[in-house]
Image (cartoon, helix red, strand yellow):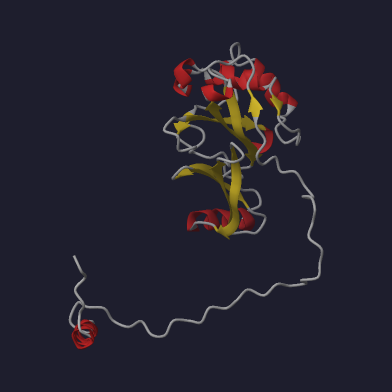
Length: 252
């Protein structure tokens, strides 16, 4: 069937009717001229590019957890304390040194069965961080100085020859204000040295690295309640420091 040609005059009339209708009640209205796009300017373009990162922040570092099997690939069936204890013997795929826990925390983890009140392993959380339809295990471990280690674990896939195993796909620590989930990202909020501000780091799954990466790190104005706490602490040196452990990480 041949296409029907619309006369140019009819097209023009239709276009005019469409434009005139934009000004009707409830129709579209002009927002003014759009700002011109400005091409970013590159500073010091003659500088040679860096060939290696100056620091290793542990991003993309993973570790197979020895002695842990995941029944039916379901991390809900794992004992969080057993995972934390087995993780003390794990070998990372590259040694950044950032996965190490303080000696006092290591001793507490090993003694979790006999001294449960001093066990630093917090209640676990379960989220689908990778988008594959299966939950990952997220653990928080309290450390001295109100620091918190946050770790995520993924059940290994059978086609990698690791059926039933467990891999740590994220390990970081900070003096966190809170740990939150946004979509599939883990958001860590930490205090800044600047009063009234805080750091927020988003950790996201990267399929190429098969690990969680710190994909966004920013410093932002803290919520007003945090600013008030900062002002109170500054004006009253004897006031106790507010608790820094995140409510999202401790299961309360």
